[in-house]
Image (cartoon, rainbow, N blue to C red; front, side, top):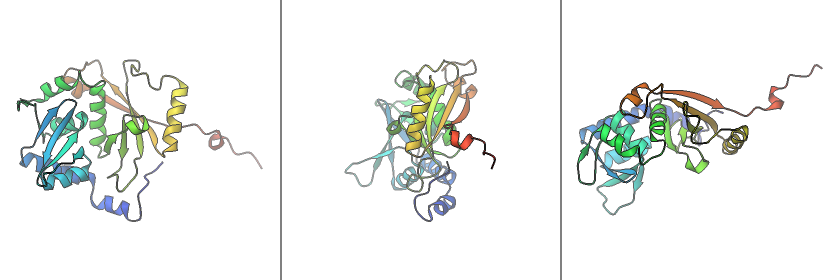
Length: 237
């Protein structure tokens, strides 16, 4: 199932403005302004100027928060988004409510107990983002993420992404029997998405930062339904 572009000229617009270029511009802007994300429960709040607001929207990081101040815009980042900006791109620093700066290890230790399966989700999110996919929450479709080839205003999401552990016997209980596969595939098919399963292999490492990020591996599996009509041999005439 290929990309479904939204309207005439959408593909040309995407090719003329690649996501890698947008993210690079955002990274430089955040570094120059020494941006800090405020840790608030299970989200991170990021203050942005006008330029950064445009770039965050174009790169699809976070969700803008409506406020009365026209000169300042706040974005609500998920933990996966915040950690990617902090650890992978190194363009955002994380501070707690008391304005105390948290390093990568402290941020990891804070999030891991609060967010179930966070290490695997973080690895999967970073894996897709590094391949220049736009990654958004997939809760609406019963999956972990949905992946877009470019900005959602230009193209529909192409993949529904499930993140599973490659070593823990699928402790989250998904895709354990064939009926799970059939239900998930039917749902994905009804919304014109392909099911992409990312298996996170710890390779003998635990969730201790940063060794887990350095040694984890990701296996991609594209799951499709078997169609007997398409798979049947042509009958001789």
